[in-house]
Length: 198
Ligand SMILES: N[C@@H](CCC(=O)N[C@@H](CS)C(=O)NCC(=O)O)C(=O)O
Image (cartoon, rainbow, N blue to C red):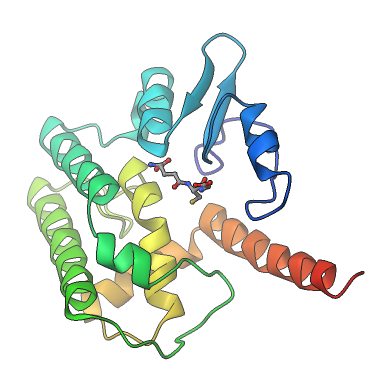
């Protein structure tokens, strides 16, 4: 939403706090993210949120049908897959190239996500659309969906291909993603201070 200039108010909840269950229940949800719209009510789940937003802002998906289909497929795969990578490499905006022992299943996920990105990039270059280095040329919902993977690959010392590194640089330089990472880093500081009793 930030990348596309869609106005919204952000409410920050303490994910691991004592009041979490009550706090999130106020938004008729059990998990974040949840989007609350005056007309539509509470929309829980990242994929549902992005599909709902795309009803109103269709340019959030690639505008060519073939790229849009591939983008939807990539998002759905991310949403329901890559479980080993998601559980063994927790998203941590403050970590950088941290050593981590990963299972074969996690290493296979890391390879598979890079292969998927390459397929997206290859299709994009075949279609000759404006290319700013994102999965489908210009930033789309697919990039928003994979931003947490980019942040994970940056956080842990896992080897990545050159095209992956180029994509990661493009993503991390995007102002909306850079702001998200910076806010995540600032949040860690707040939690650390709270634990110390300040
Ligand atoms: N499928 C959901 C997953 C959401 C999810 O797992 N959110 C986590 C934080 S990233 C959460 O709210 N966990 C709190 C809990 O499970 O109590 C989505 O993509 O929106």
